[in-house]
Length: 176
Image (cartoon, rainbow, N blue to C red; front, top):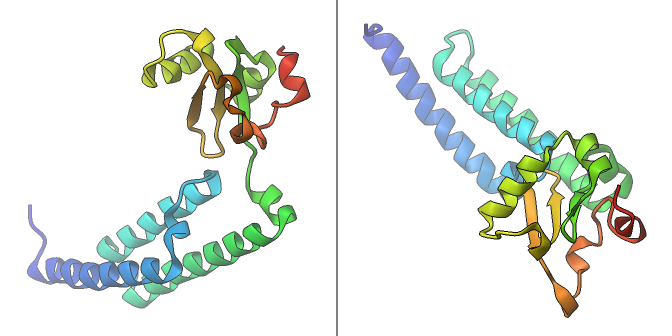
């Protein structure tokens, strides 16, 4: 039921040191390190947890190996996000565009098929925002992280938040 005291002490000691390192490294690397703006960020965040778990529980993984693994991911994530913020080419390589799924109460059928989203999922997202009618929705956008943004009718207030959404613009009026 319980491992020997040496195993428990190992987990406690390495876990404490790893935790301190992770906190310091994340503070140094900045908020963007753990953001979930796209699938790439999500995968890297999961990898951090996997390395930390290996440091805590795998006797074959030394503290130095774990710290090196975390450091490599942190540095690569920092470099990639730094480049992405400065280069549209790098940004296009690692990030997807938000996609318009519903526009002015009408489903964008081609976009739904392309993104593998059902009408029911769109309706659920609209209901989650407390809106009872699709006609009261200006747009539903699938964001780069896979979440849905529901934008209520905007009337004459403008639509600048939709400027970078794939499928919005002239083609948004020909919903297929």
